[in-house]
Amino acid sequence: MIRFTVIFLFLLLSLFLLNITEDVRQAVILPFTSGIASFCSWLVQLFDADVVAQGDVIRDIKTGLAIQIAPGCNGVEALIIMFSAIMAFPSPWVYKLKGILLGFIAIQGLNTVRIISLFYLLQWDKDWFEWFHLYLWQALIILDALVVWLVWLRYLPKKELEADLDGNQALA
Image (cartoon, rainbow, N blue to C red):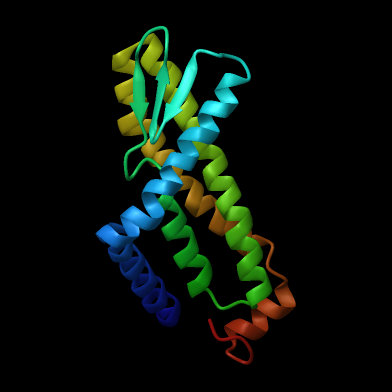
């Protein structure tokens, strides 16, 4: 348990610090966030042609109302938490990679629902938008990272997991 905690905290702090550096922000975070905005806009355009994405902004052409996917709203922090937990837990690499891939899909899938719902909440009522944005969705995205990790733990093979926990095989 101490080993897990130390590795988890080290990865968590390292990745959060890396996440806020300007070079990483420019090279990775901003293009990733723009990609999320484009994807969400594309999904919405299947039902509503009046929506466009411009960089990290999703805008309704008719109303002019728009949301910006700011740092902290792109799911990266939840991904960092999930990644750190999976990597810190002693398990075979193949299961770590599967967990990270499926976790990425789960977290970004929920984040897509979050962004689109917030876009339409803003169109409907700014007060509800603020409440959902600040309170409900923030917690649900982080909770999603925890649930992904717990589900991943649940599906680890018991035989290999017991050997790993005894320290006989894998190094994280």
